[in-house]
Length: 186
Image 1 (cartoon, rainbow, N blue to C red):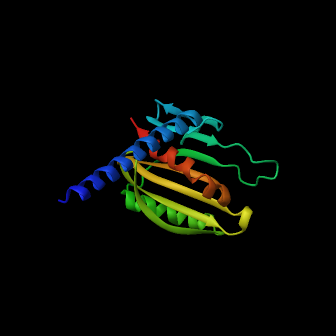
Image 2: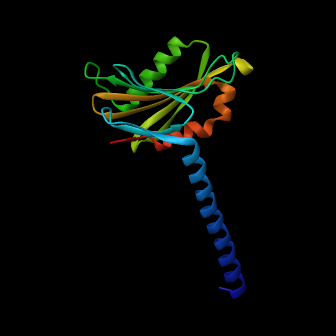
């Protein structure tokens, strides 16, 4: 290889490597300053959530936790929320594909004013799953619901569900990304 080209490649690689390290450090401080860990030993789940969100653990038998974001003001129609729920599937055993299809069918039936964006296969908490997003139309009054479905055990379904206005969903997608990517089962 030409020595000049080799030197240029080394310089460019060093620049991108340094930029990656700086970006990782910045992200660490952003996340650590605005987020804290939620851990539920009984359900065996943990994830990062915004520090200013209200945490309500074990709200109901099948609800592990509910996180509620701050209202943007008195006219805020949809304060953001994020919940983790479980579904006992001993009576109706199914695989993750069938479980996600069931969720999509149920949500489409209940929320007739929301259109479903085609489900996407994901990995969540090191398990295969699906992200299913529903959105209504209507500008600032539009709503978005994102359901992340996994099956931690053969007979147990688990959903991580976000609900909020579509403008907030688009603006705060990075928050949802941190919450879902930090989700772990133990």
